[in-house]
Length: 343
Image 1 (cartoon, rainbow, N blue to C red):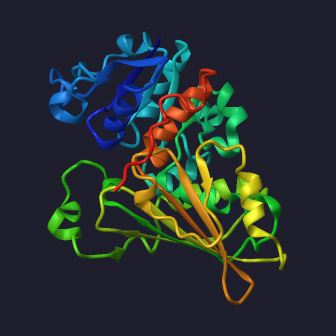
Image 2: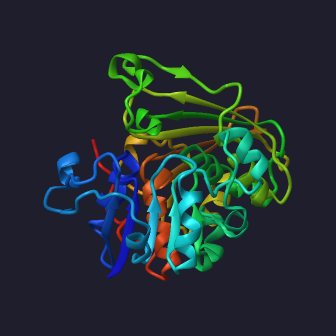
């Protein structure tokens, strides 16, 4: 069995990693760290893991982590870049769920995350972990920067259009909504039930830290800069990302449904919905699926893409396990074959 360590396993993404690896046939979590919860059993903090995880949290220890085959960082921004280099030097593969290895430009990283990047050489070799774009590079990677939730939904929604060159590369609109779990497990007034229930609001309109990640990813796909407006919103639900994407066609008459179906025909975790469908967040809840529907507006020039994911699975921990599988030459779907939950 491949030995896995999780640094910072007390948040939602850490709990999701434990849930997913409990179903993994070729890997097991052997080390789980948390300074705050050291000594406490994971299934005491997360009762849904009872009978599936008997680990206790321990203080982070570099020597113990180095005995793992792979280490996942489910930590605040700034932690992975301090700890990952020494682990990689010892032959440990790293998947970082924070933003430390997503943005290639250190200046852009500092602008948005207010941190100086301390692992420049590792940043240069890190692979951005969107398998549908970078699968071959992920297979060879020693460190993977796992994408954010909004960037995953937006990039997968626009990928076929940009690759085919059938839309304008300016004026794209990404109107996105997220469940409250996207804000993390830490107690915050804005995440309280009485603050979010029966309400709906936009945030980060003047600038959201996922914007440069989206722009970088879309530019990689299009092979040139792509300009878009990105506005996130908070929904009164626990899980889910819904991205509604608008772009102007440069090639009228293109068969959009066929374009998407052909691009994603061999992708195990992207489902192109039937023509005219409207995917719902609950249709992907608990699963590692991105479900996409493509529409043409009545003006016959505007393409509208609906892209939904579970922000904690395909938008975080599920995609991290998908990257792990690729890095170790395993079946890409290992541990990720559970169906979404409904209702």
